[in-house]
Image (cartoon, rainbow, N blue to C red; front, side):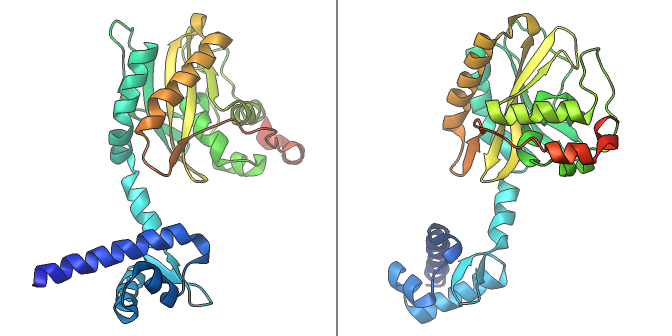
Length: 277
């Protein structure tokens, strides 16, 4: 009997969380929630009190219940590096097989991109990157895809990336002004580029992974620059969406083009010293 009561309580809590998730920010009054779920009001109140104590549910000024910050913490735990890798790995393998190019999954930590998965096609010449490797985010397509979704005003962008950029090749973008231009272009086109800025003869494209307004990582495709023309780029981006999209759980989406992204021109004029460092 004790086991039945535990199962019933868990089921009741899950039903309440699901319905509150559907209700959104407006939440639900206790009486309405109990009626919708077909549950006893007093028993449901006890369940909601326990969920509220642990931060999974909160009440607004009107007394309505809604999801709390604890749900976000759980979601973040689910999408940490190792979990994200396991979620995306099959899709990344499918993408690699389809396009016959090296594919990476990366996350942003501080000013660096960290590679958490890598798939190399048979017969391809391997690159310098390895799982666990860190690289300045602004010099990579992975990093640019994430940053283009994370920062939409120039001042905030500058404040988060104070470290001078080392020019790896003659083509490396090394000023915040030129990088901001590429970030805004990436927002508008729906993917980022890095063309021979880290290694001559090699270029990358990348698309960010989003959970609502929050960017949690990015996927890149790396290959010889000589075959990265406009037609090839469009093929690669379509292949990425087709290969990765079906493997994403509910709530995660891939970056899409954002028209007329704000380029923060006024902010640039106010901060000339940050632009040309």
